[in-house]
Image (cartoon, rainbow over all chains, first blue to last red; front, side, top):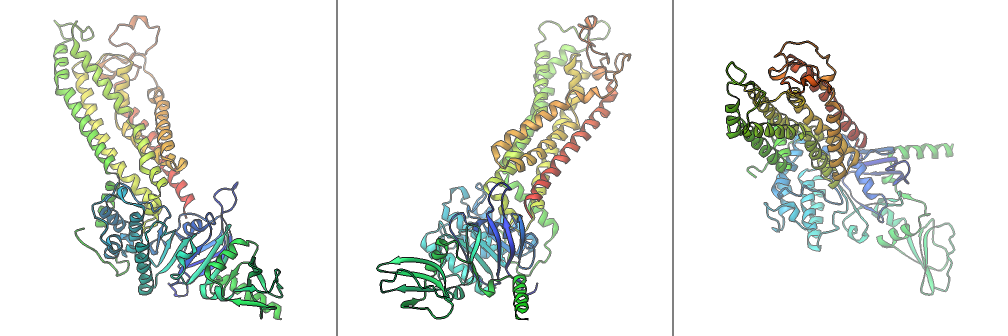
Length: 316
Length: 312
C-alpha cells in the first residue's frame, strides 16, 4: 500500500435509497488523508450516516466513486472498523462471547488484539464478563461496540455518533483511547456528530455535510483561517461586502456581525475576529447557499489535476 | 478466555481447521436456543417413534394382527371388535406423519424470521459484515451450519419413520387406501429436501422483506404452498398401472387404479391405492427430491443475489 493513498477519497459521490426518493448525498467530492482525526459534522438527516455506511462497504453508491485506503470499501473490509449509530450487538450473548465473536470474525485478517478490546470493554471495571448484552445500558453497549472496533486494530475507524450516550467520564476515557490509537498506530478516525462541541478539541480535520452536500472540508486550522468574523460597531446594519464572500450576516445589538471568507483586507469600520469552530459551522448550516469550501488537502487528486489543467489553460 | 491472543504480525495464516471450528462454534453460539430446540425436537420425535414401535400400541396392535391372512385365521382387513390398539397405532402414525411433513414451513419461519431477518433489522448482520468476513461468506456460513444440522436430524427421523412404516406394513397394521398410498410414497429423502427448501426460502424472504415478522409469515406460507402444490404431482407424473398382480403395490397391497365410482372395491382391502407399484418408490422419491433441491438452490441463489446487489 502506498503511503500517499488517502484514508477516504470520494469523487462525485451520490447516494439515493430509491429512485423515487430524494438523494441523501449529492455529488460529494473530498479527500481525507491518513492519520487524521476527522469530525463529520452536520444536522440530523444530513447524510452523515449514509456517508459512513458507504465507506464501511455496507451500501453501494448510486453514482461516483469512493476509495478507502486506496481500495474499494469491500476490499478494505479487514482494514476498517465501523461502529453504527445504533450500536448493534447480539442481545443474548455475554460480553466475553461478544468479544470472542469479534475475534472469530476477524481471524482471517490476523489482526485481532484481544487485550486492546478488553481494555476498552472492561476499562473502568464497570462491566462483568458474564453479563448479557441485553442487560447493558446504552453507554455500556457503546463501550462494547467500540471495544470490537479497537480489537480489530483497524487503519481507519468510522464511528457514527460514538459519544452520544456516554457519560462525560466515559467520553473522556474513550476520547483518550482514540487519541492514543491515532498517535501510536497512525489510525485515521472519522467521528460523526451533530453536536459540534463534542468534536471540538479532539479533531484536526472537518467535513461538514448538510442537505446531502459537502459544505466544508479540510484541516480545521485552514478552514478556520479562511473565515473572519466581522462585527460592525457604529450603527451600520448592512455590510459593505467589497470582495468578501459573506456566509452569514445577523444583527447583533446595534450593529451586525457577519461571517465572511475575506479576500484582501476587510473594508470599512469593522472589528475583525477569528471565529470559533461553532460559529463557522453554524453559519454554514444557516446559509445553505454559501459556496462550499474545500482546502487543498481535502481536494481529491483527480479534481486537483483537473483544476491545475484548467488554470494552465487559462494562463496560456 | 483461555488465551488472550495478540496477533500483530500481519495476516499470518491461522490454521484453517481452527478457523472453521471457531466459526462453527460462533454460528452455534449465536443461535444456540434454536439449536437446543432442534436437538430436543429430534430426540423427542425419535423417542416417540421408538415408543410407537416397541411401546404398548405397537406391540398390542401387532398382537391383534398376528397370523391374520394365513389359513385358519381371519383376513387382515377385517379387524375384530375392540381392536383399539390397532386404531390407536394408526392414529399415532398419521399424527407423526403430519408433524414430519409440515415441519418445513416451521424451519422456513425460523430461517426467515430469526436466522436472517432479525439480524438484518437490528444491525448485527452489518456488524458481522464490517468485520473481516464478506457478506457472502457470512450468509454461506449462516445457511451451511443449519443445513447440516437439519439434514442430519431430519434424515435420522425419516430413516426411523420409514423403518416404522415397513415394520407396520409387514405386520399388517396399515389399511389400504389413499392415506397409506400417500404415506408410502411421500416419506423419504424428499422430506429432507423440503426442510432445506424451507431454509433457503426463509433466507430469500428475509432479504425481500427485511422485517422479521413479515419474513416469518411469508416464508412459512411460501414453503407450505410449494409443498401443497407439488404434493398431488408426486405420483401423478408417473404412468399408472392397470393390471398388476396382488402384492405389487405399497405394503403388499395391490396397485389397483382408484376411481370413486368403483363401488365393487369400496370395502376391498386393495381399494384405491393409486395404481403405482411399490417398486416405483425410489424413482418417485428421487425425482421429487431432485426437483425440490433445485428449487432450494434457486431460492438460495436468489437470496445471495439480492444480498450482493445491496452490498458492494
